[in-house]
Image (cartoon, rainbow, N blue to C red):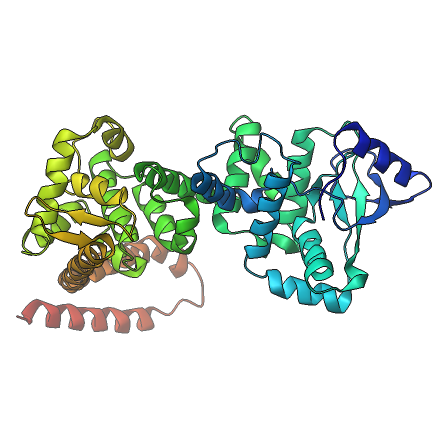
Length: 438
C-alpha cells in the first residue's frame, strides 16, 4: 500500500473527508481552540512522520547504513523514506504486543495528523494496524481513526504536541532514553536554552530533563569520536554508565573529568559493566588502566599500535572531544584507536599479526574489570581506615549539639539532670576505653 497523492491533492482529499465530521476536544493541543475534526482513513493513506523523535536514533542508523544524509528529508512522503520509516516502526520493541492489543481491542485512541495527512501522533499504532491488515489479513484493521490539525499548524506546535502526547503520558515507555533525550535537546534549543520551559513541556522536573540532556551529550561525544563506527542506537543499553559518568564529571576538574570519561568510554566500548566502572571514578583512573594494559604482553602491542597511529593521524578533533586544551589522559590514544574500529573488523599489527577487534575489546575489557576490582578493594580498605575517625567526627558534632541545646532543655520543669549525669558517665567510660585501645 503506497501513497498516491502529494501536496495539495492530499489537503483537498482530507478537507473533503472532514465535512460534517465529528469534532473532538484535544486538551494537549496548545491553542485555545482545542476542537479537531475526526475522520476515518484507509490505513495506508496517512504518511508516517519522518520527524518523529521516537525513531530519531534508528533514522541515524539508516542514514549511516545507506550513506545518504537526505534519506528522510529529500522526499519525506516518497516511497523510500516511508518504507524505511515503516520498517523502523515495525522493528521497535513492543511492536508485536501492540499488534496483538489492536487485534483484540481495536484502536482505542485516535491518531493525530496534519492537514495533509502526516501522522504527528499514532505512528506506531498506524503501522501496527497496517501490518495487521496487510500481513495478517485482519480486515477490521483496514482503517485508522484520525484527528486532523488545522492547516496552519506550525512545526513548533507539533513538537509541543508530540511532547505532550507521547512523552508526558502513558506512551512514554515506547521511547528509548536516547530518543527521549533527543526530543528534550530539540525542545531546549527551541526554548532558547530555557530549562523551565522544557520541564513544563515534558511534565518532568528540571533536574530530570537536564540529566537526560547531559547524558546525551556524552553519547554524542562517543559517537563523534567513533567517526561513524558506532551509532546512538549502539548505546541504548548503556544508560546507567552514561548517567553515572555525566553526574560524576559535572563538578570535577578538567583533568579528572577527562580521565574518568576516557575510562567510561573505553569501558562502554568493551562491554565492561557500569557497576565495575563506578569504582574507577577517581582522578588516576586512566593511569591505572594504562598500567594494567601495559603490563599485559598481549595488549602492549595494541597500546603501541594506538600510539603509532595517533602520531601519524589527525588528533585535533580527538583532543577537543576528550579534553580540549587540557593534557590528554594516558589512554587517550588507545580510546581514539579502538573507537573507530567496528567489532567485526580486524587490526593488523606491525608484526603482521592479525587480531579480531572483538577479541581485542574483550581483552581490554577484562583488564579494565581487573583494575576496577582492585580499586573496589582499595576503596574498602580506605573506608575501613577512615571509619573510626569519621564516626569520631560525627560524635564530636553531636556532643556540640548537646552543649548548644542543654540550656533550653534545663529550663523545663520536667528536665532530668540525673539521667543526663548517667549518660555522661557512659560516654566517659567509652572514651576511656577508646583511649587505651591499641
